[in-house]
Length: 212
Ligand SMILES: N[C@@H](CCC(=O)N[C@@H](CS)C(=O)NCC(=O)O)C(=O)O
Image (cartoon, rainbow, N blue to C red; front, side):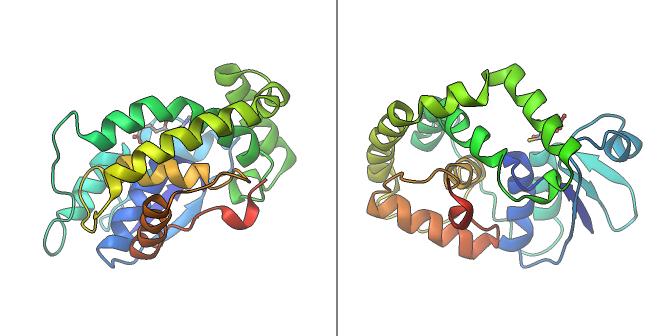
């Protein structure tokens, strides 16, 4: 099977995670950010992730892909959780600050979807419509980092003793992975252990080496 993805994309990370957790091989096809034709040709719109199944049909929607792959072989790993789990509630509140910190930094990272100047420019154009100018976001970093570190301290209690995998990990790990592009964030012990465990279990690498 093949997955069409952007490396920065949290929805793509979800789809990649299930292959690692199930130890199933997958070919990653990184799409350029300004490549409209490839995804549109496959599923009728510009979106990632897209899964190409073994029968060469295609499907979009990250959690549909996760559930499909999870159902293919072995014991399901994506066990359901309640709608208002502590992890989901934490994530709902932390998602926007994580985006504001990570988007302008991902935009300048060496990622395959930004391999051309026009692709990188397309990302900036798309994201500044959502979040405003990157310089303004970067200028807010000290306040945003203080804010997210407070939230990580709260998350640390939620993650104490957590060793299993369930649907909440598909919410939390992709966002913490995005945050790993931000230099200078201090991670409390349980959160640090969690992201390292998930990186190893899923094979979806953190961005610390490119943090800025
Ligand atoms: N609900 C979709 C959302 C996917 C999504 O929003 N992907 C982003 C990339 S992170 C996207 O395709 N954006 C449109 C674009 O690239 O122009 C899913 O879960 O797969």
